Length: 150
Image 1 (cartoon, rainbow, N blue to C red):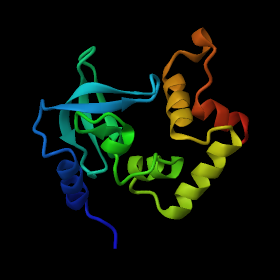
Image 2 (cartoon, one colour):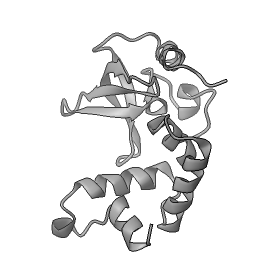
Image 3 (cartoon, one colour):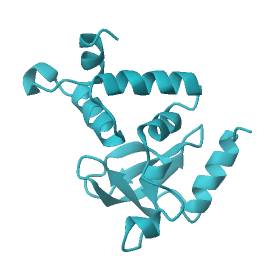
């Protein structure tokens, strides 16, 4: 059956070595395509992600659970021994646990219609949406979906 929020949170905390607020972790930053040091914040209400405070600039981000790891290891395989690289579907499920499979499949189809097929492409387009598009020339997810008739 489906996992409860408490089970998701417990699994995430176990995988991270039971960190406390302020514990050092590594978090994946898609724009840089690299793992950066951050301080653990808290697990989200759904247990599907957590907040981190980046050590580089003290800003806070809420990330899907698979974007946060224990510090250490020389390769992604060591840090993610049981997990393949996340798919777009996995990112959507983690971000929106309230969506059913039909909704996830529909959103994936619409995103692929506008050229978004990976988590990195989605996060990049979502970041562009938050920018002042006229000033930057960036076109975000919602703009692209509207232009495609979705």
